[in-house]
Image 1 (cartoon, each protein chain N blue to C red):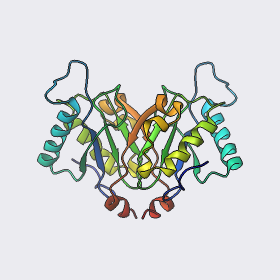
Image 2: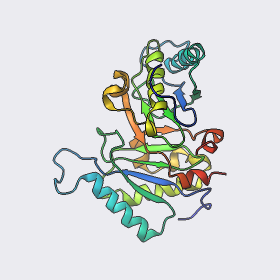
Image 3: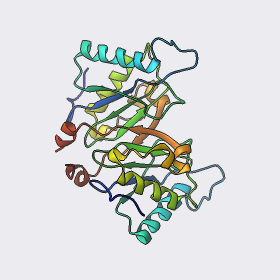
Image 4: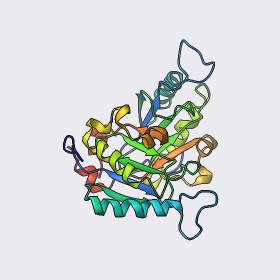
Length: 134
Length: 134
């Protein structure tokens, strides 16, 4: 990926592995499939991020769902992701996030899937509060 | 409020002050009204939390919206909140959050507005990542 180098600690990408859709494969939940695709794509690309499986991000009406977070950056939640085809797009978007101040990527530079699928964004915790962590 | 004492650093309650609804007061956005009600209620109650105004939490279809976060705890986003009547309920819910391990309040103990209005939840950042913050 071109552009400026990533800023600060690597982001964490949370993937809901319990996400399911009507008529979806009973053998493998769509969320689990997306997690597998993302983990494989990260290994292939060598991206600097942590991918974590999560049991439910509480966005059950908009599967599949991911969230991306990093210290000092806004957290973003995205839904409506296709488990079979969106891994590369998600990782491209997270790459932009890792390079943008506070994780805020200009609207027009965001992947279409992130523009349409945004569920919520949350500011970074105040530094004082984050430092108080024990 | 009864029950166990709060655990860890005080939570931060983010309130979207740009939230608006069809036909809402042009003089004061519903989100700004909710922020005012919450700030006044916190001062009155003396609750140990930080209330922060935010320009858009990207939950524009479900006003009014808040998010609650704290180091080492899950972050929760709630929508569909009534700006005039929900301040006490939100603060009661945040009080339970501050007392629950990792901020996870058992489903049946959550205020009805939180059960119906949940938009998303995001796990706490791994401690190693949070500590790396500069």
